[in-house]
Structure formats: structure tokens, C-alpha cells
Length: 358
Image 1 (cartoon, one colour):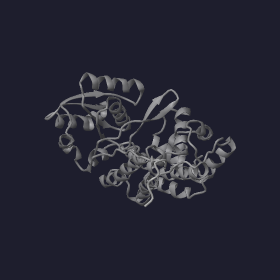
Image 2: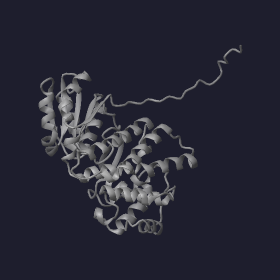
Image 3: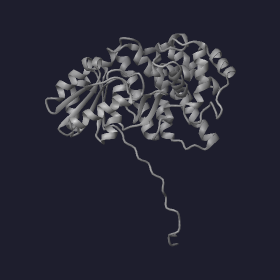
């Protein structure tokens, strides 16, 4: 038998992934929040990160239930900004928090996961609405003067999604969450394109899960309606799966491509206008057209769900859309269908008109 050559290169590939240990998705899931905390063997002191409205919707109940076993503090906060993140971190240090419960929409959960990473403590994601796929991911979006900035955070150790609570939130948020996940289809086209053109490494496992999430929502698009708690159930599973695909990939690549770059550009041009998922859905329609894919299928699914598909529906002018398409290439260094140079105004106007966005 030939002896092993010590000079041979050592196999060095490695992968590190962190996934939620407990995921509760059901009616009245909040009732189990204290048991989840005890199962996860949290330390004595905890911090609830929430907002004024979301405290009334779910935060107060969470506080009452968990306070029976833990010393809990509450911080009411606003958007995911650097200033608010600092306040959350200070509150966690002052109360000697050993865990965080993020109760609210995307901004509260983003602040929770960023603070948890900074302080090296676990957090549980407890959404009161699902306007995007961040409830299960380790990515967060923080608002800056130059628009939202996507940053690495920490993944939730647990997710408690109460379908009753989420069903009571405005349906617009749920529709936006659907649009964000459906836009995975163009993000995946971009990733595969980058793999072919630039030899960018790609995760087939992440692709399969991200595609399943989008396709499942399209399949069930006719069943997703306002006021139906079953609709929340149908949406939550793909949204969690979409977040998990990012954990597998180690980046937002399977769920974020040129359609997200368009959304971020629109945030700069017209800040605080539409929801992130709404803009990504519209972006996906146009980017799939550029990929020469079935953009009409995406548009039809969004219409069935009740998500916007035109500039007018998100209170944007034709110029807003065109300028965002032109600017999109410059907002992030990620290779997509927009290439190295981006779209000209003429090309941007054509794809927006051809798809009925303007």
C-alpha cells in the first residue's frame, strides 16, 4: 500500500451554520413562550425589544408570561438605526440581559439580532407581522443616510410565530412578505448567472430551499387572502425556509439579487415610501424580464396575493422607477443581470414599460 504523501495539500473546505433550535408556528403560539425560554435554559435576566404598538399586540403578553420565571425588562424602540441599536445594547448591558426576545416587525427583530450578536447572547424572534423573510435569517438591515445597509447579525435560537397575532396585523405586511420571498426567483437567476460568468461559488442546497419557498407561495397564491389565519400559516413556512436558505449559504445570495438592489436604490431616491417586500416584488418582475424568464408568472402571483405590481400602486412616478433601475447597479458590489455597468435610462424605461410597471 502506498504511503500517504505528507506533502499533499490538506483538505481545507469548511462550513459553519447556525439554525434555530425551536420553531413554533401555530394559533396562540405565544402561550408557549415561557416554556421555550426554559427549554433553551436561558439565564435569569432577559430583555424584550419591542415598539409601542407591538407591545400592545404581543409584547405585554410575552412580558407577563415570561416574568413568572425570569427578571424581564422592556425597551420600546423605533426603526432599525444605529442610534436605536446603541440604545438597545445599553439597555441590555444595564439590565445584565442574558437573552433577548425581539417582539414586533422587521425593525424590532433586526435590532434584536444585531444587539444579540454584539453582546454574544441568544435571541428569540417573535414576529407580530411578516413583511419580509428576516424572521429566521442572520441578516439585518440598518437605516443610514445612504439608505438601508444589509449587515451580518446572528440567527435566532428560536422562532415563535403566532398565526392569530400576525393575522391581526394589516394584510399589506403579509402580502409584502410574500413578494419578498417570491423575488427569490430572480435572486437565484442572478446567482446562477454569476456562477456561470464569474465562477462565483454557489450552494445548491440553499438554492433548492430558496426556490421551494418562492414556488410554494406562487402555488398557493390564490389561497392567500386578508383575514384568513390559514393564509398566515401558508406564508410563514416559506418565509422561514427562505431565511434558512441564507443560513445555509452564509450570505443573502439566494434571496437577494438585482431586485433587492433596485429596492435599495428606490429607498435612496424616495425614502420611507413603500415596504421593502413590495419594492422587491416589483423589481423581480422587471429583472425576470431582463433574464428572459417568465416575468408574467411572477406578476400574476403578486396580483393574486394583493401585492403591488405597478409604480402607481407604491406611489412612485415613472422617473422614480427608471432612476432606481439606473442607480441599482451602484448600491452594492454584487454581480447580477445588471452586469458591471448597469442599465441605461433607455433600457430602464423599456423594461419598466414592457412589464407594465410604468
